[in-house]
Length: 140
Image 1 (cartoon, one colour):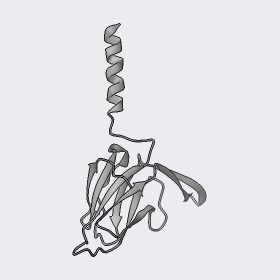
Image 2: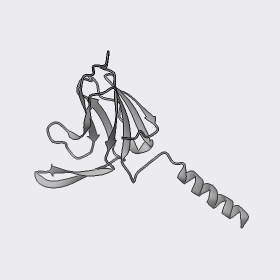
Image 3: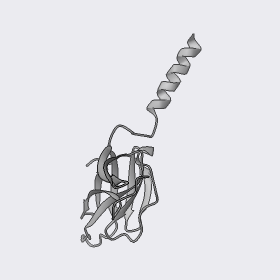
Image 4: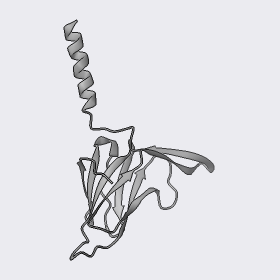
């Protein structure tokens, strides 16, 4: 019986230590590398979703915010719904932070690599350049 409780406790602890966060928004620390001598170029940061439903012109996007300082903490909402069209019929298209995303900044020539936001508690990205890495959640 003691082994059973140890196993149960170990399972509970391992699930608490999971790096996924399917129930909440994901925080992204954005570094604006255009800043020099106190001047920064403003950039709009956009999340591009990779969904199986054919996208509208411009793709499935979520505008996360504008960064006009050296850094900012932006939020990918936990989930949302797009108004899509499938086979000519209007249909709601659901998405969440368990989908695959890329990020872009206005002045970034390349998007980030593909990532699934739920795979880390937070993320860090630098534009231009698009380097992306898991990170501790920032606070807005």
